[in-house]
Amino acid sequence: MNIDKILPKDSKRREIMKKIYMTFFQKYTEEEKIYKKWIEKNEPNKQELEEQRKAIFKNQPKISIVVPVYNTPKKFFKELVQSLQNQTYSNWELCLADGSPEPIKYMQEYPKKDKRIKYKIIGENKGISGNTNEAITLVTGDFIGLLDHDDLLPPFSLYEIVKAINENPEVEFLYSDEDKLETAKGPRYGVFFKPDFSPYTLNSANYICHFSIFKKELMDKLQGFRSEYDGSQDFDIVARASELTNNIIHIPKVLYHWRAHKNSTAQNSDSKPYAFEVGKKVIKDHIKRSLETDVEVTDGLTPGSYEVKYLPKGEPKVSIIIDGAKLKKEKILEIIEKIKISTYKNYEIVVITNENIKDVQKIIKPLQGVFKSYNEAVTLCEGEYFIIIDNNLSKIDKPSYIEDLLGICQNKQVGIVGTKLYNKNNEIEHCGIILGMNGAGDLLYKNAPKNIGTYMQRLLIIHNVSCVYVKYALIKKETFIKTGGFTEDFSGMLVSIDTCLKILSLNKQVVINPIISFGVENIEQIQKAESDEQKIQIKWKQFFEQGDRYFSPNLSKNNTGLSIDI
Image 1: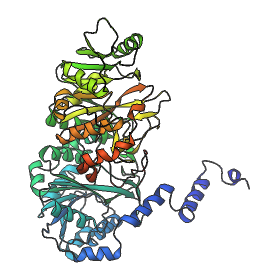
Image 2: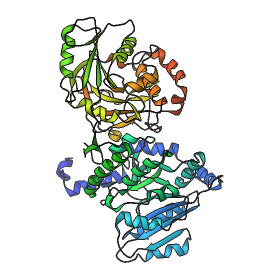
Image 3: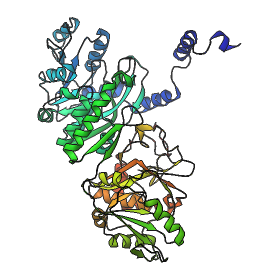
Image 4: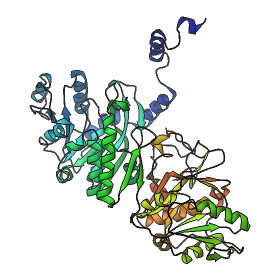
């Protein structure tokens, strides 16, 4: 049978048959099948939901769900209300503000049947921010949750939020994981497992989005939503909230279902193209307020992400340490020439070598231990920041590499900024180390194409991580000295893990900028010395027990790619 003849390619008939086949014979894609198994294994069953209904919390805050409505389809609204009435935690209220040209008649019946539902006619359309603010005026609860008029909450959503509030009494801002669906009965897909609060990740994309819950006092300080940011008003309020509180909790559970249809950004990122332009303004204004730093923001390589260039303040000296202990003079000079493509001029070069090299003021003779040599080199550096370059350097992609790293590392909250490394096949050698992956830690996306779109765009956007490779990274000298320098107790990748955990223990951030990339020839030094893995896990027991906060516990740590941990 010639299928192409009966059902010509790109024909309407073929498309209809494909939908029929997917509906009755292949209901779920492979990814959806895996996620379906995760749901079965990780979400509460009927008995557990009944136990939640009987639970009595010490603190039972009222959760006010705020929803601006505008010509809302009856079916969507009915399902939204049902998802709230099905909650295993019952102390909630639904605050509706109707900005439709004509008040929605069917909606006015709901408050009569359920006193937890409040409905307000605005009389005009004040836009998404103005309408949301009108809904906030109805709030009498302790916490405010933001819900769109066509989205849904699973029955255990508010229970998990109140549980987190009881476990973290100081919390002021909570957010959860999310997924998508097209109908209330599913199937669910497109799950988004998020990291714990990650300020540099947030500056590159609004990864928090749904489900956001704010303490009422915090929302009062924020003074609600701002109309000039309509389209990215949720991004703006999340960014501003992060400026006012550090009491931010991520609940690594799917507590929000984002409905996908042709007019929603869940299914079609082009449905609100103006939102991405407003997003750039959100980022610029947020960084200006929080870091007092100027940035240039352009479109990222994928919709919803942004490329952010942090502009350095002044021209502090940067020291570039070349590890030439095993290199001949010619190779060292070759590396120096590559370094000199820099558009940033206030740098010095320090070389570890036995060779006599003219025009290099600081030559350090190699010591028996390589990390002793690095520590000595750092003490001799005049720069406030330093980068270690070894014999593997083959290419520096961007002449602006120093200032692009410096603009981030100048933040007093940052201790080190890593970079992306790739080999001669344009495959990833390093773009961050995941703590606890395959033992003590491993390299995420190793051997993947260097610029592919990935989960959370980790190869393409500036973001927070727990660990980076300490070479080809810009390190703040003051922070490095406080850590005690590189240790001789470990080798290979474990030195990087140890150094970054020392930086994190000083309450400094570890950031990676994949936009800055270096070609390298051979980086066997990044590999792990397995004999020391147990030793480092004992030394940093608290970090390993806590897990990598920038990598979801719902993702597998048994490979170097990204997959759901069922």
